[in-house]
Length: 82
Image 1 (cartoon, rainbow, N blue to C red):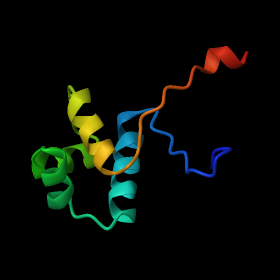
Image 2 (image 1 turned 180 degrees about the vertical axis):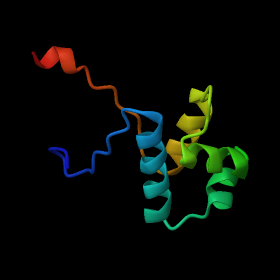
Image 3 (image 1 turned 120 degrees about the horizontal axis):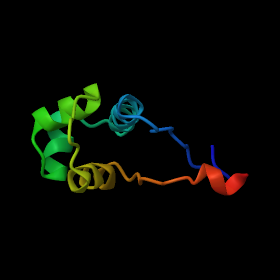
Image 4 (image 1 turned 120 degrees about the vertical axis):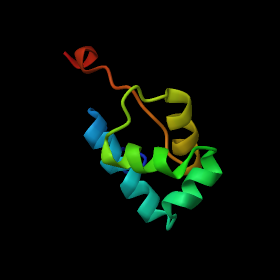
């Protein structure tokens, strides 16, 4: 959990991103088809994303999916902590 009480999901790799998206989708009670429709992507694209098999991941599509899940992508500069 972050300081503001929101869950932080580590998406440092494509497989971790995949698990995070799937977890968020399930927590929101959405089917893959419903999420795909809302985000304007295909169900196959969601399936591939959740499998971590989205080679050449299009960030615009990912951002639409995250927006529909009421989630965001945060970049953490670990070198800034040292």
